[in-house]
Image (tube, rainbow over all chains, first blue to last red; front, side, top):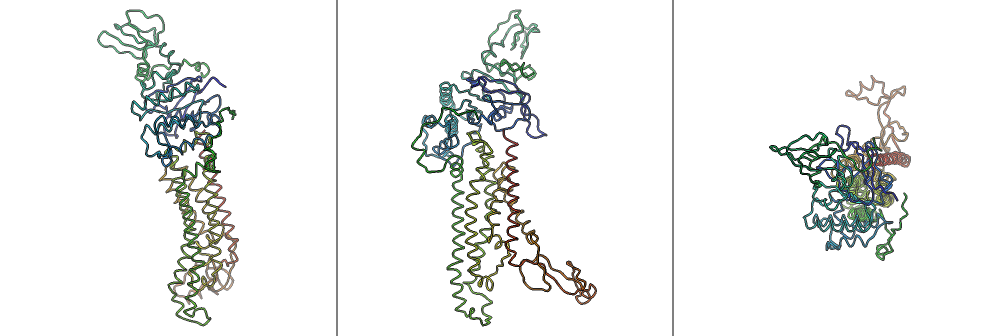
Length: 294
Length: 328
């Protein structure tokens, strides 16, 4: 058993020669057992990253290893739910779960899958095309959890769900992951959706990894300060706004803060937004990969 | 693979309930259940048409010809105009072979659209690839399972069609409008029906892989098989050395005709307006015809089948290569 769930080194992907890079020089390491949030704006490359991890795309350059091996070799040990929750519309819920059993003969746990479906009070005989968005997501999740994955990849899992369904499904998911020690990698462009459930963060912007590391460490490495405008040269300023004589800034402290600053720890959302508003801010890796990759 | 894993689920009674089909085969047949029913229906209808033409259709046509006095050896002008029962028999002949030769087109459209294009378009292919099934195994099943059904079905129809064709040669020769070398008869009477149906599958799958879209896959698949079959039909007479006969007359599958001179030189493209002057000027001694007699049926059939199967192999290899290039 490896303690690394996913590791990328210089991963890059370009779709066709003429288009730009969807991902470039991505390097990060995700320890096993974490719940990792992949955050970033739409089109940042989150889906491309997850599709590589799922073995659906071949990198243009660099490597990505999953569960200590190649994504193709780890196929059986991970599950993936794509953004639009593809399922065969003409199949019933029951047949969809049967498909999970037939295609994962060595791992399938019917009880888990059936419980996820039953929790949503879904009729097993109803066809997929008759389901609502939330019900469909539930079936897709049942298919993924029934596989008993060591690594669960979820691309925008809650995007089209109402708050109640989102809360319920997130509860189901987190309980299952905690119980089995599953590593979960979940992407979202709604940061608030993930706060409170994740303990590791990967911020992707414009195809590059901007922040990578344990959530607490990343938050601790930044400080949100407010005070009269003053010199901040000793620190890495991610974003700074001055209103009158008052400055609000998100910094990575480079030493002792001098002056009359009021400082607080930022929230995940503040951290993410500040980095997205400042594309030139240097990336920060707190997952021990930078030395290895450079 | 490193996983031997202790996660094997306990045996459940439901596993035995649905018989012998498992894994990808079950998935494929379940997802494409309506296509399977359509194929069974298509085979039943085609076999029905052929069997009717072979049995009741031929019997009633022959009975009518007997009643009209067309089978007693005496010349009878009334027989040339044919009769409704004979023309019904002839229509049965046309319909049976048409249904056999149209199958590759339908198969290509289905394979490009529903089998591959739609799955790549809506992501259900990726759903399969993220179960414990590699893309290569997925594609192999997509080819193998339909191929088995296609081979079984088309061979059955070919056997029935040969039985029909060989058992009523009298009717076919004197009252039917079909010859052994007519495209649809030629294809329906031999291995080509199966080879073209397989080519429809292979080209459809390749079209779906290229188009990654159901409607585009359907269109490209159908057009591709249409073009290829047409090319083969014009190539067909040249796939085996022809025989030559001097003079005219219907001898079989014509490869080429023309005039020859007194030295034996051929003038294949000679067009004569003023016939007498033209013949004299060009020293034309007579006309010749290159043709295939009915005895060339199997050599021609097998040569073409070989080429078609080579194309099937090439299209299949290309589809796997495309898949491999795209996925991890």
